[in-house]
Image: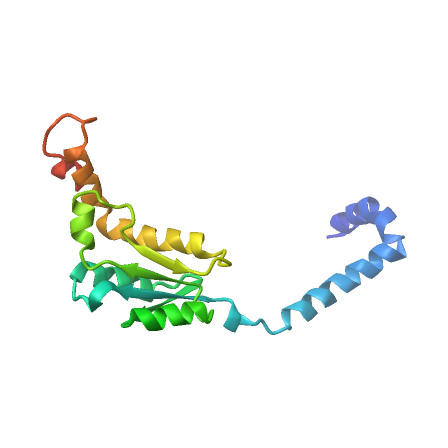
Length: 171
């Protein structure tokens, strides 16, 4: 320990003679302690997004997608709506960041690779979070239906030789 203190004093002699350095070394722990005691405002750190299944369908795929999104614990709270009009009003009143209308025939659209415009997004023009929330929604969609989309694409595409790719895709 004596050897350590000797080397410490030799290397830090110049810094320890400066009163500003000593003051900073005493202020830093006090400042960190004070900042850690400030209560965080966690109530405003989460954003709310609405989800609506078109025609209030009992489609198992759409319901599983909505259930998975509402149970996720990201920085976004997803809320299921049973009425499109009330979701639109909440978006206009800025209670929601944006809203997603999931079609009741989504598995059929995805089966025939008609993906463009599949999910309708409602948001205000001033919404800057909508693009990052899109990534969360589409990541969950790909998690549930990505393998089927890939299998259909391999069967339909002219870029790959004909064959049954189901075993390779789901292996």
